[in-house]
Length: 256
Image (tube, rainbow, N blue to C red; front, side, top):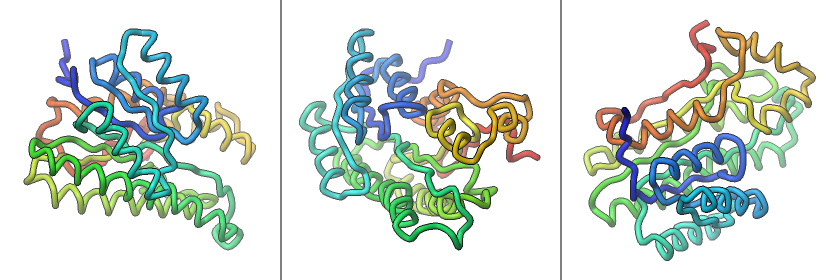
């Protein structure tokens, strides 16, 4: 039987109000970690907090806009105020809303996608690393990239670019801080059944069956629980020799 060794750890998950972030937060709580639910939408963030508490877990919601440095500072301050430290971080929050060829992408949309997906990951990771260094006993960070960083899609060039940037930035941080006990890795989801994917399919007019056929070797989309398992493993003692790695959870999409 697996033992991730996460009981009693303090885990922070961004974008934890729905989809993959919700599954990750609930997964940490199920393993006995105390979880900070970072989410810009207060209603969904509090709902996840309340659900974890109702099931006997320990969770605390903090409203956070990861594209805003002051908001991220408050997130870390409240995490420390409630739990006193930070052991595991998962930077999941992102958007994918451009749905246009590069020359047709509005400047404001490109700025927003970049601000959340790349700058937001930077702002969070920078502060998480500083906190873990100050504690002196290491920690884990899991950032979210995408299969689109490795195989871009033509109506999401900016999104793909931000996610490719996350890979380069994360690898640089992993090399820098591994000697100090901070293991930093990435998950690259494929077509996972989330509200964001459902919105994207509706916008571009593709059915779930067609999406599954094109993005999976086994004819189905992925489940959020499958992403959560990958994050838990990368955050656990079971992956102690893994760092700077991009773990694709994509139904074999990148193997084609």
